[in-house]
Length: 307
Image 1 (tube, rainbow, N blue to C red):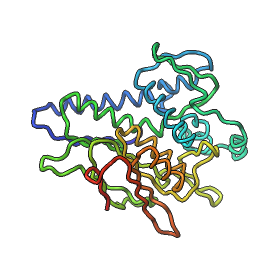
Image 2 (cartoon, one colour):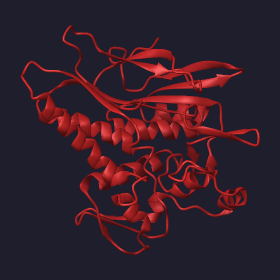
Image 3 (cartoon, rainbow, N blue to C red):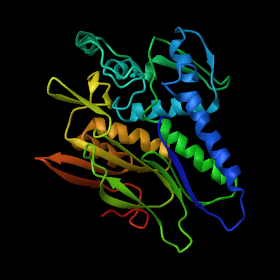
Image 4 (cartoon, rainbow, N blue to C red):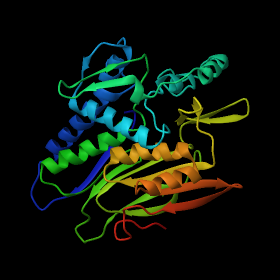
């Protein structure tokens, strides 16, 4: 997935660490082979190239992620939508890495857009999907979180129940350290080019994901464009939110909702987070400073604390 993954774990039973490393690598590689927009031969890219109306058999994991992405898309009223691959590419955040012609980007804004919920049809009994309409799917807002969950499932399969696994800035944790201390991770300050901690979170059992505008962006004609797309505007998101960190039962859900809340913005995003019982930390830009807004959902103070 173009980044690094890690696993920290404790177990009273003996384990072959080389075998664990191998199986964790297999787990994340399988996700990459299925869901990458950077691999022309991935299952997702094969689906993107397929003409509408033709059924395609897909692995269970990919079907699961596609269906979850559509659910979050519906619940967020379209703020999260995986049918944005054309936008990602046009704005220069796809495999080509360069923005398209400005007139082409403007044309995309004027075209009616179809959501993934409208464009995809599922046949779960046969394990297949087809496109009703031509769309280009992008799973960059959810696949990494699912990869973290797969690492957790890998360790659970070995009877390991005290761990912290991560891919880049997405985490899944369970249990704690041998001395009874919880897993503690830093929330990065959203400053471009500077890696400093804004605060820390103590994690319980579940997933944590952060979406922000300070790592993947570029400036053009005096304007700053970040990688998160607002499907409703057919353009990069533009509001006061610098980053959103979300706690959820799984990292896949945390990943998708962090993107959705980033797009929704502080007011609407806070309302939606409360509606769905999400715990979220909004970091807002306010006159050159950062302001934090904490939304406490189903997580209790025993599970999560910030500083």
